[in-house]
Image 1 (cartoon, helix red, strand yellow):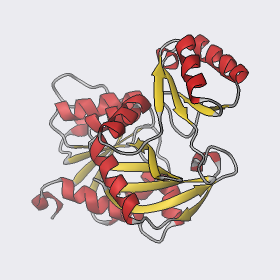
Image 2 (cartoon, helix red, strand yellow):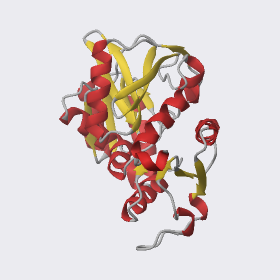
Image 3 (spheres, helix red, strand yellow):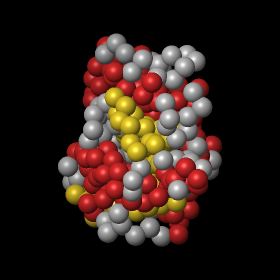
Length: 286
């Protein structure tokens, strides 16, 4: 098959994926979205002959528009625009999870600093304030006092971008200094790892230590439900352990898997390509 990889920077994740595709004899077209112009009706020349497009854009805005254009051109894309749109926005993500009955941290969204402060006070301290769009734990704040809340809200209100005026406030989950990252393919877990850290943020991008994690039946069920809730695809599902069981705090649509691949025995890129091969007609793959 001829696979197009949408990117703006080739990271180790993309290198692993590219190597696996090429080792199997698939043709790969790398498409730097920074250099592409998208027409309303005719696909760019670099898209000609593609059987499938894999979105690996770093920027959320590029991911959302590029996937929308791919679908308009009739080219299958992973992940779909629908999935990208839900996962790219934490508020939409939380709504989808809650609507599907997936346990997720209690969350409130406010549009002014006064109403956001009211929501924070209702949660009590500590609680968490997050940007509705963002990754790698950036611009997240654990708020321990009213004074801190007032200062952070004032900073966000003056940043200018409209997304900073959507205040996403969430309960603080007292997890055991770790969370669980699962890479799943249409709800089927490939592998999972725990991310340990003394810091309240346990992102691998923040330096958390990683170890393989064996999912139990409850975790597998939640991963499947969370995947279905956002539209399925190649996803990173993040779980936290609580006294009452697992909670899903986020589903990621352009999931990084290099840390997971290093932490587990499973060949994650191979599993991803196995799945990608099911997304095009069998005669094309053959």
